Length: 306
Image (cartoon, rainbow, N blue to C red; front, side):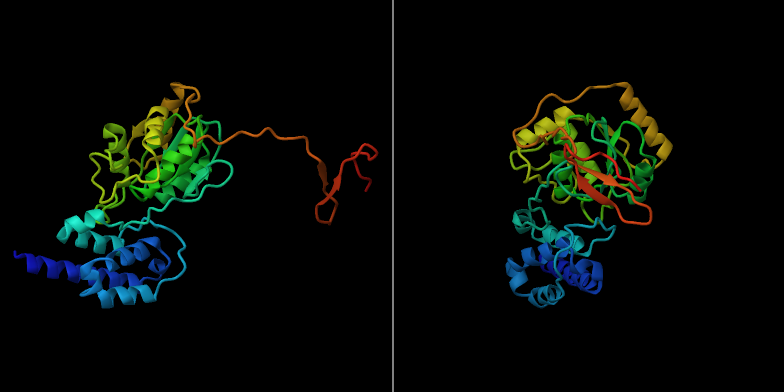
């Protein structure tokens, strides 16, 4: 097949997939679409043959609500993959995925995500990949020894958040990886990419060696953070497993090998523990009324007559 025919076929896929994204309301506020359109706009093909398609997509942009929903069929990702296959050099250089540094917040976990926090001083974190219902079921059971249960949809930004949130809690010593990996058609494969990180590490560009995802590059974490993460947690990979009982059995296996808190920290990873101060107010329930509060002073009794 000639290069011209391959190019025309790729352009057809890009136009079709971006048209699907325009019709899908969920895409309008998604970073996947917005980042892909802006990245393609910087290319020669984007400024010429794809210009009308990109303009139509840009016209429906809404304020960004999320970076990635982990959809089983992601139209912008399929369009980006088609471009990268025909123009591999440009595709390698382009930032086609929303991987900007997320802002931290106080407390743990410091970075937002799709997870359920159960207890800070537990040893096991469970990642259910694309199986959202599995994460919810396990969180409702709140198994002893589990600190957090969450999903993972991308092989770059998602893995970075896992790394930084786990580094912020030295009590977590096991990462149990289960559930359905994101479909190959999207090109993410975060489960396979995360497993490859433990097996082969990253190269000098921050790319996960052996990862089959399209863009498994960790650009918002340092090599020091990655190395500390790999020392802190042991990966227990049962990708594809969605049985609650089987997964909880693996949790029990981990707890029997109590590893104790991780004693190393990186300069920017630890979340300080603050000891609670003596409360300065008491809250009193009054029948048929809202809660009221009063300051405690030496001259006041610590009760109220009803």
